[in-house]
Length: 155
Image (cartoon, rainbow, N blue to C red; front, side):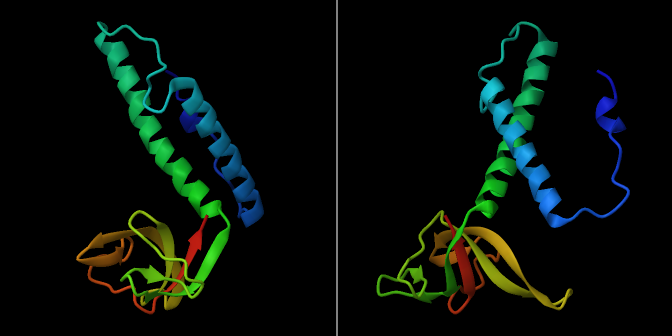
């Protein structure tokens, strides 16, 4: 295998956000194309199961595919339209909800606005809603209450 992967020229300047998003969409397209070619876990690959080198190469592709799928779905989620935004409060069923009435349940992806003491500014942190004695945000942790947190949801 050649070192051509390492020979790609590095950028010599800044890139504007729109150009970077355009390039990201091209990368996501290539990830999906690759997934359709080899399968989500490499199941479409033809290889000799008795050849340990080919088994290793298949395993490498499968491992890469798992990571690429994570990148793909994370980026796709972040590109979705914001459908709810506002402060969270518990409803009568004990679930956190937006003022619109839209409630959150385990597994729902959501972004929470939080303050970074080091940077001294607010930023969005993504994660999912999960439940363990109470609902929590995976990006913030179980010990931080969601009550009154400013959040947004994409669908």
